[in-house]
Image (cartoon, rainbow, N blue to C red):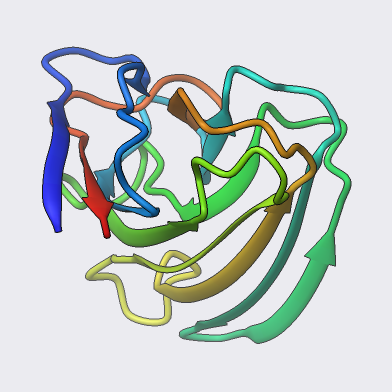
Length: 169
C-alpha cells in the first residue's frame, strides 16, 4: 500500500483527488468527515460524473434502528453514498469515519465497484447519529478512474475533514 495523496481541509469545501496515477490495480481510501451544514452523508463522485450512474446497496445498524437498502440509479445526488456524516448540529468536534476500497479502478473494460464501512459517532445516548454502515456500490462506467471527489450531501465538508488515498498492487 502506497500513499498517493492526503487531504486535510483548512476551510469548508470538498476533497478532490485529481492526480491519480495508473500504476496500481486497486485504490483504498480513508475518510474522517464532518459537514458544515445540515448534511447527513458523504458522497463519492468519480471522474466528475454527477448523472444517474451510481447504484448503492447498504446495511446499517444504529442505537435505535437497523436495516438494509438498495438504491439507484441515483438521479438526485451528486455521487454515490459512502459514509454517514456528522451534521454541524452534532456533538461538537465529532467526526464520522470510513474506509473505501475501489476495485480495478484503472480498467477500461470493467464497471467500477467499491465497498467499505463507515461509522457515525455521537456521545448522546440512543442518538440517531450513532450508526455503523456497510456498503457496496457500482458506478456504471468502464472508463479508468482519474478523479475522485468527496462531497457533503448538503453544504460543504467542514474544516479538518481528512481523506487519504492509497494505491494497492
